[in-house]
Image (cartoon, rainbow, N blue to C red):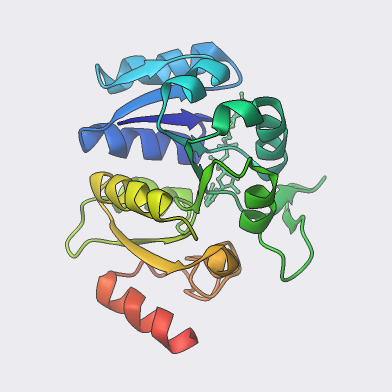
Length: 216
Ligand SMILES: NC(=O)c1ccc[n+]([C@@H]2O[C@H](COP(=O)([O-])OP(=O)(O)OC[C@H]3O[C@@H](n4cnc5c(N)ncnc54)[C@H](OP(=O)(O)O)[C@@H]3O)[C@@H](O)[C@H]2O)c1
């Protein structure tokens, strides 16, 4: 299986590094192809670099590690290529204002996962994942003991199977929060997001199941 990672910033770099460490093949794409090439060279033979179009074409799973507005643009540009792919969305509905502060870009109660899922062709297999921890914890907490949890949300069995495998390969325990209607819970300010209701805590599997049940 090949995973395309679009965007080589905080989240894209951490996910790519962990997947390669876990033996997964990745193809990296960035706004500047030289950025993707530099990271691929650093990560070694399981990693390669390509244009966004070729990375999506060559992959089974596509992780859009970009900001929500960019993600919407990329889906509009490449919708046809996403048919049949597992599409992974780590985005939070936030952007930086003129003072550099993060502000919510969607109305309360609307998740970026529901927006992204609604833009995809029906043949895509959507899953919300890889955005439930801050980038620093995502980079540093892989393969700890006990394993840290990454929550995911999907209505799609094929997407669930793929993301369970990738989260495990990346050195975390996958825990399903629910369907796409649970995406809000695992996005920033949600009760299951590290910097929402979890107050910075990184959960293990037992703690995650308790948190899921407590809020249900
Ligand atoms: N940072 C966190 O703690 C965190 C936690 C959870 C979820 N998330 C979510 O994860 C996503 C990525 O966050 P991040 O912190 O990794 O952001 P980031 O560090 O700013 O990285 C975004 C990457 O997207 C690239 N990019 C921009 N336009 C592109 C295009 N058209 N094609 C391909 N790549 C493009 C950027 O390239 P350039 O640098 O060249 O513009 C950059 O490498 C966001 O949706 C965010 O809400 C972030």
